[in-house]
Length: 498
Image: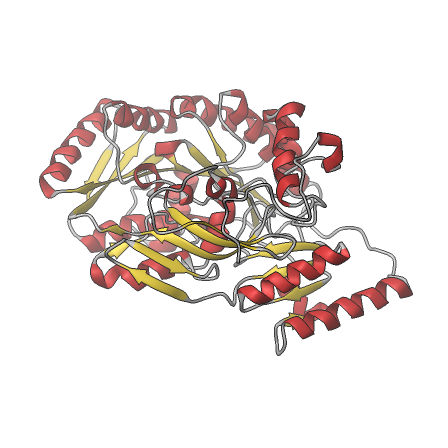
């Protein structure tokens, strides 16, 4: 959603912009600087396309040294910086600012090292999520976190948002699969956290950086854990007469001590949209569909399939189809992976939400969403990472109809309030960004938010990195009694610096 028209910049503002652009061209020569309005349109938004803003200038560095020089330049001149990966963020996390340099990391697109004995890959942040698996699958390995956008989303962006995917129930989110990073602080310092070793001593700064949404530093290298592909993987398509019964089946499967490789749920509108788009063979007569994947040794998988079938039957399942080949298993997943674009075919626009709830509350939240749908007069299609309670309601609307976008936003906010009310959280993997920024007080009180801002102040005392994201209101660091930073040095002497 474009903001109101702005007055023409004055002569001093234009002079300063020309100076910044010229200096960026010195740091990143060639075609690494984009500064015309038409060319910058490609960067004016991220996956949350309701919001648009042209940046001050777009800079595409290729080396860590260039990133360091850019950040030091901006730090010394009090210029704001918005880091950006592939732009697939769904919370406005990479939304540009008109007075900020947009630092685009897409040219960092090489895999630097594949270490099979240590089961690790070192990649630049612009490498796609799926690109890591493609690089190692010839030896029977893969990278476990698999967001639906994995063909396009970057590993650096995954670190920024702590992305998950359909297999995060068993194999964890990005935070559970990142071993180390190289990052550049706002003052230009290059820092390494972690490495190929399994754990690091001292503070868990790697944990702080994973999911920090570009507020603390710019990642220039990522070391991830790769896994050996399981001996067998088979999936079940299970249909139910209601979402509540499907939700109860999810809870019962986990309650029985079964941890599937993946467990996803779709409601009727999402099922029909995905089937029309992909033709995966989904049962169209059911109200809810579970995809349950079981992996491991063959005997174990066969046993667990029988267990899951029995649990589903006790929850009144109406259909159950078990994959008989690897091709069929991948077809089952193809519909779920394509659910977002599939829903785009049945509505002019949709608003993708992201919240997480305790699994046992799934039936209650689904019922609440139906009531909200009636209240706002907007349809909703639901796809869930059901095993870990991560919801992705897709609110259908038409931006050309006056008031519909605003209703969709209010609908989404009420869904997130409902998630928090039942003991959940505002986000599972999409991040807070600008979308959920003003809802943070629903989950955190002032003391909580102030403590989070103190962490921000320790890394970025002048609030130059990705300002306007996550926090509904930023305070001056001095007001919070921030950590003392002596001569520009962070108070972590054990971190190796370059």
